Amino acid sequence: MDPVIITPNDVAEAVRRAPNWKNPGLDGLHHYWLKGFVVCHAVLNRQLQEALYQKLLPRLFTTGIAHLVPKDQDTTDPSKYRPITCLTTINKTLTYILSARIIRHQNSNQEISRVQIGCRGGGRGTKEPLLIDAVIGKVVKCNRRNLSAAWIDYKKAFDSVPHTWLKRVLELYKVKLTVRDFLGQCMRQWSTILCHLGKRITAAENHIRIRRRSSKAIV
Image (cartoon, rainbow, N blue to C red):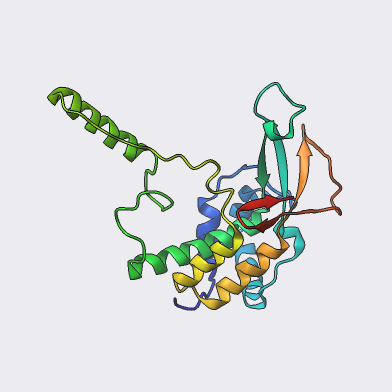
């Protein structure tokens, strides 16, 4: 993978693609303001490049706010809540830039099969299999043929991926060592602040560390 040199154009493109008023993290900064204050892009570019090579981000940018949204009326069971974590705007801008570079590297080296439609940009990972199933079912019904099919549903597939495997995948895809070390260091710093009904139930200074061991998340 080519060295990652962040440019003001990279920052501008990441900010342009981001929603204006999506709920921000601890910084409270919406992308709307970054889009308006274009003069900040060059400064932000310099700081992001420095953070990448120093393999370090301030803890503010690696701490999220996890809003606990109840799935049903049973609010006494912790498993009945869906945590939605809001990250800082600056962190999302940097990860978008790195993601775009990694995708460009994968596409140029054809490291992901073209038949894979899930977990990649521009794909319809859910709609395409449904359309294929519908067409197959219609053909089978019209021709009065027998059909045997099986579907595998992974419960919380993305939540159960250990960080060690994420880092291993980056290594297998030959992602630049600088990027791998930076992301690995950020993973060790990841933490969250719990928020329920708009009120924080953990203090800002008492971050909850989220670790991965095996395939289970430990809070």
